[in-house]
Length: 386
Image 1 (cartoon, helix red, strand yellow):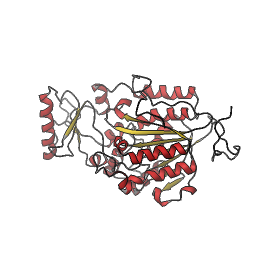
Image 2 (tube, helix red, strand yellow):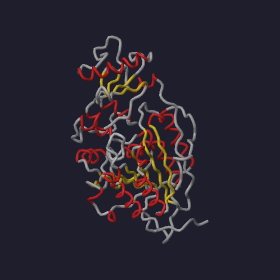
Image 3 (spheres, helix red, strand yellow):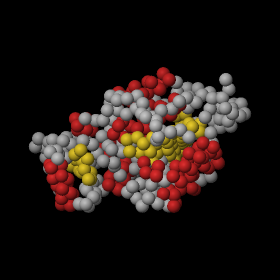
Image 4 (cartoon, helix red, strand yellow):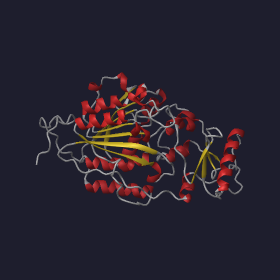
């Protein structure tokens, strides 16, 4: 039975006018990203075994672009979404974007769309309307949901453009990595004749203390690398404050892994037991996260693992990027482990992979990241469709 009428697939000139042709699984997926950062999605697609062509990326930071060009080599690398003609951009099948979050974040001024940075997502919507990718994945901070003028515009535009839309707040610690990193994920799938139901991936069992130590190695037992508190006086004072709070709760930070963020003031210092708090660009650049079990500050290798990546995935030194710059990029990155679970769900919903391939991808990810707790998450409220 022929599905709903749509424009022809821009990537298949042989498609009959007015209809999308069914997706062939041996077809090369075309990828485009905006506000690309480390372009984590490229690494995830390779990890999933998806054959793809990296059509374009964009980022306003020249050092980020240098890393993208060195590592990923997209066909086109735009300097900024506002400095291009959208109509001339190549069409893609999977479009991933993570616009600036500062104006929506609880750590910012909550200016929302009144700040020019809070309006940049509109450039992404322009691309979607004009080029009609089969799948769109949008990531941002959870507080964007409180800015109704942004979220409602997204839903309205995507609905009018014939997309089915789902959204959910997902936390990186629920997908195999000991970092508390909640993010707003929106998945939009173009309504075609082969559209299938979509559901966000089920959560995994959170990491135990031992697995946290596996990710951030414990250095104890007389090792010269291990220290009970930081050598920096200010950081040592903040760590001591948190250790005293933990001791009052009968938590021994020398036995239980604890992360203390020393980038704040005594009034704002925070710690997290058994996992790491949300990594941020500025605090990663300052290397302010102290690990009680490591007896040292977290470094770029730790940040890499905590963002679901493998050490060595990104040749930042070969791109001429400094350690500090790369640390900041990691603090700003999308969580690779979360994308690894979301992307197969989206591709299956769009009819771009078979059920057999979806199961294969999912099982590989489950084996990689941990034991599955549940196969579905509630779709009430936040996972609503438009």
